[in-house]
Image (cartoon, rainbow, N blue to C red; front, side):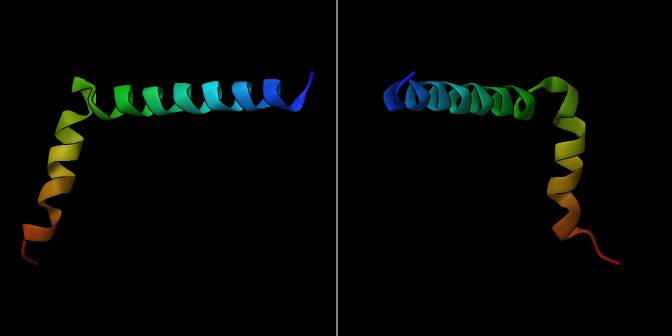
Length: 45
């Protein structure tokens, strides 16, 4: 296994992680929590 193979594996792993984060961020299950967190700066004490 040479250095280029390791680079390809690292790139593919990073891309898969990125896609996983996108799926998690845009899932409908998390929408309510994200909407609530987005309103936190506008709530008064």
